[in-house]
Image 1 (cartoon, rainbow, N blue to C red):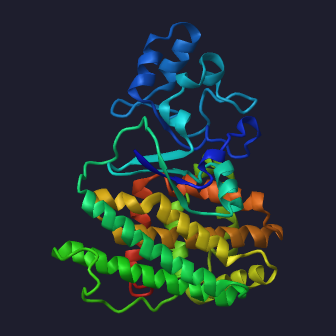
Image 2 (image 1 turned 90 degrees about the horizontal axis):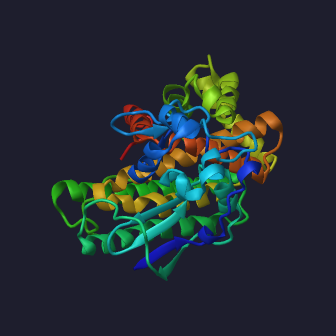
Image 3 (image 1 turned 45 degrees about the horizontal axis):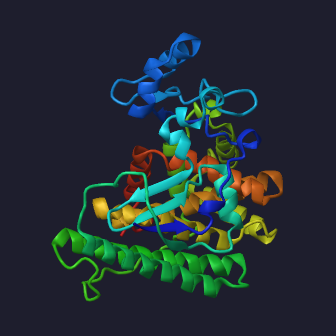
Length: 381
């Protein structure tokens, strides 16, 4: 079996009790059938605790309340693993933060950046690329599409998108933030333009990746950073929730930084304050555009091939632009509040943001709808 594995995948080691953002808090865990079989047979106090902990008829879950898992111990470890071993945990817990997708002709293996250690490794990586391997896999196939010729063309289309980011990276070398962010904005516009062309082809039955397809006008608005009205819609209308104070307290703190600076401002004053926030934190050397370009590149490696199943090329690029912009916003807010932004802090911001925004299909749907509602301000392609 051919496997594309991200360059730093094999170096991952869980830091366990030393982790500042445990994966045992903030979300529910699907209890797979193999795990449920073990839990149903368990007797005594552990059996009772498992019976009380697993909830949900359609999708049995551990930690359904999304606070801290009841098996999380004071030393930062998993109580189930300590008592019964790694194989006793739900499969999700055993595999996380590894993302493994088997598409038929090829499997892809990456690391999920909602894990703060994986995010730290991403930031430190000198090479962001796939390595082609031959090997056996133990996980099932993702989706039902069996059109291998299409999958090959899909991979080629991703290379076109990655090439556009590579061009931008060359232009950004040694450039100040204001100049380099324009290059990244232009790259995002070109990528949306390409993906929009492919999406229209899919809708009209034309050859998907045909070079001679009729073009729409490229996006001319700034896509990095996006305007404050749209960022505000995502922060207040989608991401914010009072329960985050309990579930993901560090991310909740980032939201309070935003509200302290922007709540109550009209559009003009809000945009002025946003521009000043980016300008001043960049002037201090706390914002590096290449970091956000790398994040966009990693988005393509992690999520783009899921279009094999749903043909949503355009939404994949929209999400890439959206999440990269919000990461920039939260970096700038933290840097402004604390006067610094270390690599460890960058990794933690990525991890808590991804935990909140990347693990709910409904969340992304709501965020994309918010963008669509403001299409007049920022073309949606």
